[in-house]
Length: 448
Image 1 (cartoon, rainbow, N blue to C red):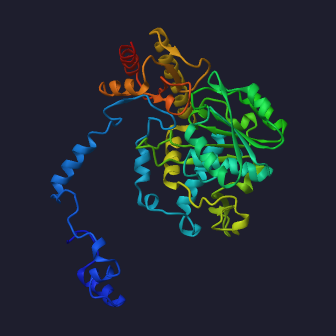
Image 2: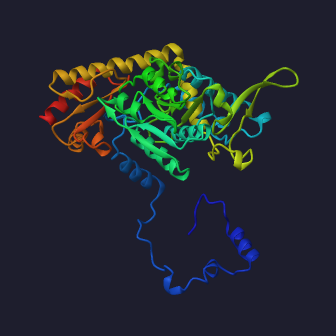
Image 3: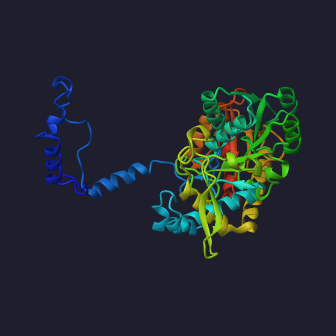
């Protein structure tokens, strides 16, 4: 079979065969008995001309429920937000798009500066002193925070709120298993962490208490109250936070958080099919030397000019393995750049306006659901998500909504016993009044 774009020529193939001392491709497989070799035709479609193939693939892709043709009210960690046009323009520049990692600072100043700006913005948003160059996603960032806490305190128990993203909890538990760390869930009450239960579960063997702010149900935790309980036993206070929400909410750093992690997806990163994402990791100054991944620092050259370098690399690629704090050996530079460009384009005022718009529109939607007879599962303050109780299975409701070109909310029954027929609804700044009103009406007709 001849492939138009493969660089391997017939003469290349023959030269390689000659070099290893075989006469044909078939001879490479001579050690495999003929009776187990596949000699028939693969059960796949015949090759088509490029134009016909592109048309077929386009028809297949059109079967997906995308956000261009559908109105989305699903969040649960991945959100439909405004992405400034300039984000794609900057990302498409070859010096950023093809950059792997800035090992050579003398030729990577642009990449290093972009990462430095990302770190600076995350530090400002979270109210923390130091942020790293990014992590794979919010889940791995939170797990790394849990492991850092155990290593720093030399304790073997982690308390994590049940109101934390269920997938994040799973990642934390997976990491902890290999380190023989016990992960215990603190129950939620009325959609937020049960403070009384937390008080009864804290002890001197707890390395960290983990909460999410806003939490998975969209509710706002009592950060000041939780912080006092956590630090009473000298445990670390770890917070997973939506960075956009911090444009309007008091940042975790102001509440005394020791580690703040999260996912930068709300800033400039498309929903795609759930990834790739960009986790962030921010800490207090005392934990700076234990931060996983890499940090970019600002310095001066021998002529006094500003420059950027990789510094404080606590990963096993750069230091002795027994002293490494993490085996994550990469960062999400391109997605971190997308987040940086989006935040820069919006500016401080724009980020705050965008966050406030999420709060206002979600509140409007919540009121409309109440007016139409729906029960809001958890009352209280929230950011851009809230929970509605239905009379029917969420899966059934979502299938009917999809026929109306609406992507419904998340089925909480998948992860939480006792929350069957409960839908987690996300309302972002992109949702219009007309879209919200239509959604509530259609939900009412289906749920009747």
